[in-house]
Image (cartoon, rainbow, N blue to C red; front, side, top):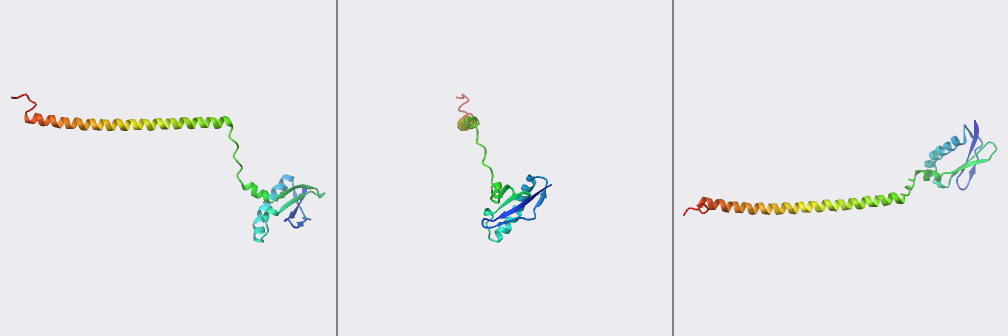
Length: 149
């Protein structure tokens, strides 16, 4: 098991870790540094220290710097990544589909307009037929249409 040292920098001071911790790999040490930085964040804010200026410098037994973890990386990890760019062919296909959908929508709307117009014309014809039928029935009742003289 390797030994790692977590030196803390706050932008002004550099506190050395003389005890260190043992981990199976540098990756485990890095993950521990992230977890510790997250735990420290609220305390730094409460002490009116800027966590964005802080960092861990992780070294090995020979005091070689293996990596540096700026606390600002915690903020970057919270951001959503930019969506990947849409390939030109896909974008063009989406535009064509959108245009076809708009044309189909216009056709459906036109079809509804034609149906409404046909219904209005049918309603007017039925009303006229109804008037004609009432006139005819009155004529039949009065004997005008029977051919009697």
